[in-house]
Image 1 (cartoon, rainbow, N blue to C red):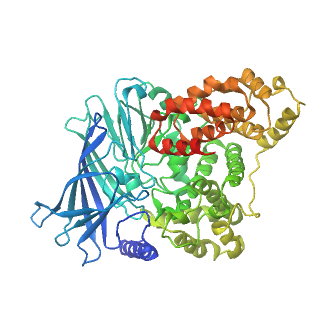
Image 2: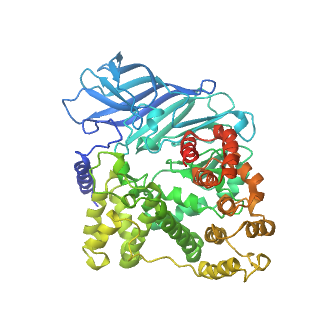
Length: 618
């Protein structure tokens, strides 16, 4: 395509993007990005581990869309602002007036900056609160070596505003640079170009040349070492964990190549990963150029690398093409979950991918029992004016992937794969809505073959509850065979000693434990533990499912190992269901309350809030 054609196409795409939500600004942001947009951010901050704060300034480069606007509205949460300056025509800095609104528990505080005209840049001098929702500060005792403290960020969905004053919405993308000062002996890394050879003398410097939304600006500071995995991949971790991380993540370079073969070039330069301390609240965070990972994925046998495939897949779905607001969350996570399966299939074969997919679909159906019907859609028809109308976050992953897989099965990969790649290519570095995807789907796939999906079924997938009856379920031959084994074992027709688990993969153990949960008694759980050491397994996905089944069965012999697990692992996916299960019986509840009293300080603020809620439930 000629350059002039490319420019015209790009301009049309941008205009189309803005028209799609110009009158539906993100309800979780105070920013009026239809008047002024941040195009670049520079952070100059110093980390104070004694006070547990980041302090310095944020410099915003602005693009004034409304030529009459003179107010800059930003998102903040618990930031101590000392002064704000605007750059004048000569490049000097002049103090300007500003006001902070009262605190809103969900959205934080709106910062209104009154400006003389429309300056190109504004500087906000500030300090974060020790309790900043985006930042977790760990003591040396909470790290592996015990020598240095550790700090990391987790900003998704709207916690970046507690870390920096910005237009905290996925609708606004900007490039960024940063200079971060940290104590000697500690390395700073960010979701930008990390130089493994940097020393930090004079500060750690970063540049992110691709535009990203605020929730993808990330930072980590601690005692870290780096290892190269391939020509453009690497890993950072604490010294005591770096060897295990290097082994576990050895296939990352192959994953990047596999994803590229399906969906086009990787557009972010390098793909590095940071393995965080166990208190990291989620499995992974797709921060561009530096995915943040939980150490719970290190099983010692590379059996949980689907997590890496998922975070890598975000380099196309989520990071490259981003939901315009959190109402359209499924455009990030549903697409990414679909792409994950395709990467797994490309690398490890159809049977492994199908096992993962069947397990994913079965757990999705099971999860529907605890989700109100009005929250089971991928997206609602309600105006995008409140998070109260948003649907269940967890269900968006498997249901969104199931929807895309249905389209793929009916259209055939020869048609669907180019369609999906074109979606990524034509919306690269843009923020999009469900309506935009539906329009693209109708024009580029359904118009050519209307029999792929009717309007009625399309509406059912997007706006209806549950999983449509027309959905085709994934069936793994290995997991089908396992069903018979599980049933016979539960009936007593097959003893624990007769279980032939020698060739079982992690997915088979996970399904087996899911299927016996609330069915096997304490004696059977004890037999399993003695035979296979499940309470002491290094695979945290398997361990979690065994602990949950043990709690439901009343098998208390697992308590020492489960206590160690709850004291050392802060991943919400694991700890919240376990504490919830332990609330059912008085004896278990008392034991859990004692454990949580000691463990709470080790958890991330997000995890603390989730467990607090679970522990308070009746």
